[in-house]
Amino acid sequence: MNRPGPTATADVWKRSPGRLVQEGDRLAAEEPLEIRVERTGHAPTSLAVTMRTPGNDFELAAGFLLTEGIVSRKRDLARIEYCTDASVPQEYNIVSAVLRPDVEFNADRLSRHFYMSSSCGVCGKTSLEAVRVAARHPVPKDTPLAAAETIAAIPERLRTGQTLFTQTGGLHAAGLFDAAGRRGSVREDVGRHNAVDKVVGEQFLADHVPLSDRILTVSGRASFEIIQKAAVAGVPFVVAVGAPSSLAVTLANEFDMTLVGFARGERFNVYAGRHRIAGLSA
Image (cartoon, rainbow, N blue to C red; front, side, top):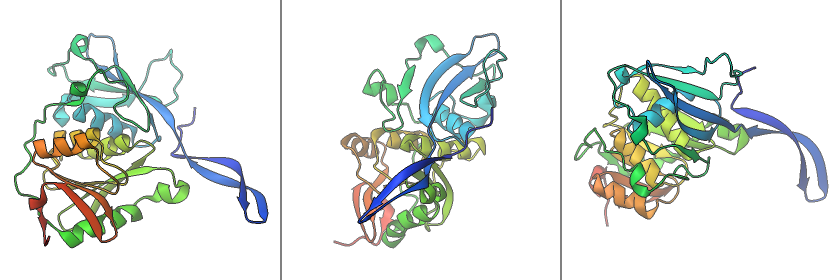
């Protein structure tokens, strides 16, 4: 089977005042991805199924394993691969993460067998405590320090990196920036939590975690899970174009993170960690 791409096409009827035409339209692709863990001498363990935009699947799996507390270091992973079971047709929808023998993994204690929809990353988890993964990387106390003008400019810089959104209008994005507002990696997905896992996973596989000098920016709202993922990856600063949830604000304060919401144009709201933003005046 050909590997699915990040977009698909469909014929649509487009209505405008006094006009109806049939045209081709480009859509964001959405396909299931099962993430499995494998260890020598053990049967594979299925951790999750998420609806994602195909592409950067290994980064998605690595970011998920890190932010869910399965692995903490790049060397914990021997390799990540698509399912190679000869009895299963290759559809590039199953990814296996092979752990090194010395990595502790107790599948019997793991209560993370759940289904994640593309709109809500915490759907089906047994309790709120199930997503409170202990952060192994302490968040730096006062850095990065970014100017208020830089924070205001970052969302538009994220937008210019959203190439798939430009084509489809239907994808979330997550990007990493430095304190000067320079854009690093950007990843897009139908699921906002998947976009974060992809951009974090890319850095994890490059052995750049913790991301203690980076600002994570997301194109939508800031949920509890996004702040949790940032905290586990050691990200001290999160900017969201949309609104944060109450639990997101609680968690940001708990980990002494900076959380900015409604970052649009020259305006933004600071919900936690004001001390990392220079140039704020009453």
